[in-house]
Length: 294
Image (cartoon, rainbow, N blue to C red; front, side, top):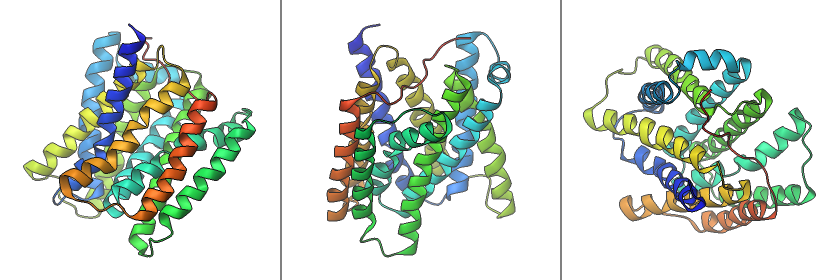
């Protein structure tokens, strides 16, 4: 596999992830918990067949081998998915995508606290720049729902950061079984909430098709491509290339459904992108675990 092929894989993953905002916007009636339920179901089925076909072993066996870190990783992904979809439903896609992109910085902080990993001074400076950008982005968001959406987006980034630290803690390169487990957790949590809130389990053809497709293509295929691409690319290259998600996310909704991007989002986003690109260029942070068979 050539380096050029890996670049293509990572860019393709970023393109798939960038469509999540558009997908949520195209949903007509389904609420966040219904979206997550269908997405979790399709993700779980898809990854079960991918993992079983590739390794000739049940993902449940692999989860047992990984142990407690897989549980933490799975639960943190459920939190990340929930916060992400809620954020896109309640704030602009531009805001949500850019706030999601704080995950690498949160990984640095959690790694320092939980794993005693040293963090470069340059990284702390870039974190401050990112915080300034985030503050600008949400400064003109006076509505409670929009503000809660921004907070949920940060919560989603935090969930992915916990997921990454859990993988480091377990010292396992088997990322997909933990994601499969997150799908199962997602089904249990969202189905319980839907029943408690008396939400319809069956969705319209449009909403059901979109949400199921999100689970397979945006989450499932996107993560497979990203982990395949991570085999030969440096962490800095991975982080920089994956920014295509942040760049294209607002673009899709602006072009296809005319969502307005505010001046504060442009200005704050510029600060945030400078911080993320600076972090990617000046040093290594983290690298997704490879897609290895056990």
